[in-house]
Image (cartoon, rainbow, N blue to C red):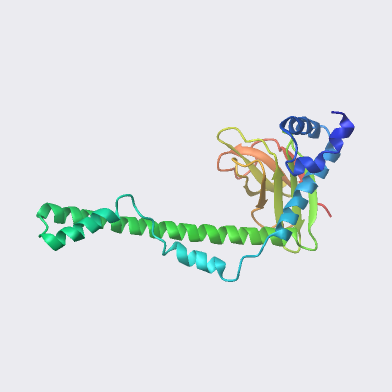
Length: 250
């Protein structure tokens, strides 16, 4: 494949439409072609915007109905109901022995514990739904803001990154595409550049090569952002050379 051919693959690469061989060739090409890296990152952001634009809004009240049912749908434990029915049947025909009574009390305690556990799981599920909905709404607000500006850059591993900034929203969104998985015990960390001082702005999910994240904190007077490789859990200040640095556009 010629260099000219590779220049034409930015859109297909951003949409994950290349074969494994073509993908590898283009990934190598990106490390030495800044225009392609910029275009690929911008197309990745565009793909996210298009996805938000065509997303179907759920029916009114669906979210509340799902949250309500989470707390009422009970998981059946293996073998749980059958011993209870058997015990009830036994009571009709004869008195329970002390051993049977003890077994029933133990079963009741177990089921009670299961109910408490299920309630806690339902609360966790509710929090996750609310958090995911809130994050998606905030990301959509930044990407669709009238003053949104995009700056992109290629990464050393052939992946691409783009940052979308809305000064009006005072927020920024980072879009990563095809980033390699960090080494064990390491994580990619985002930073705001406040006049040369790097301010922590959140972590990327080490298990995902493609992700769109709302950067933590307001943009403020930051003039750009950076990405570094940090110990698991992140650092209060960078401990490695930046993998990429991007000034904020406009």
